[in-house]
Length: 223
Image 1 (cartoon, rainbow, N blue to C red):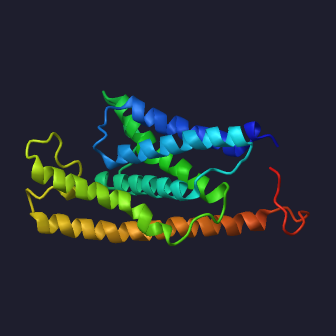
Image 2: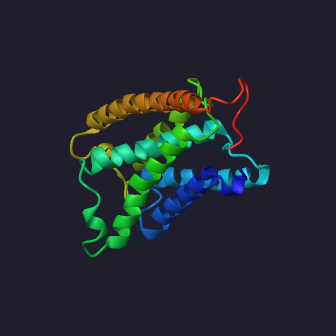
Image 3: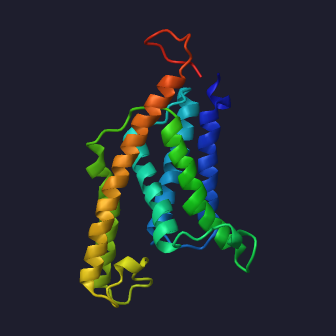
């Protein structure tokens, strides 16, 4: 099967389209982690599509970076749905209300793109490409993001949109609450990073079981 007609290429083009629509339809600022994670996903999968066409391969490049992008967009989806939206149904705002474009932007950023990327990580190649030692490296970005937000607000009191998320805001409950929330999120992010590695292992197991019985041992399917 030609790479240009492979499901992997078209799926990754769909990720590029979803992230691009999410970033362009709305007016959300780059100060948000959710926006930054979608920028990372967009940049990575544009590069992946180019790599696949240029090299004639269905494998995505830079597995460590792919794992990082997967973790960040997984954090985006879960934090948005659970902490920010409290599990609310995202569908009604897409068709009712005065600001439908913003709702569609949020839907692509927080739901469609995360689901597409997680499915890509689980089902598409390369498989078994992540390592447990990648986890600390992956966590550097979200922890660095928190550090930058807190440091920036300490240095610049009049910075616009000083607290992009409620758990960074010390004005109501103090910094003890903020540090407690960061500690809790750090533990949760470690669990999610472990889940990303685990999903890679699960995808390897599933793809191995689905491999055609006629394939000779030690050979890979061409499609």
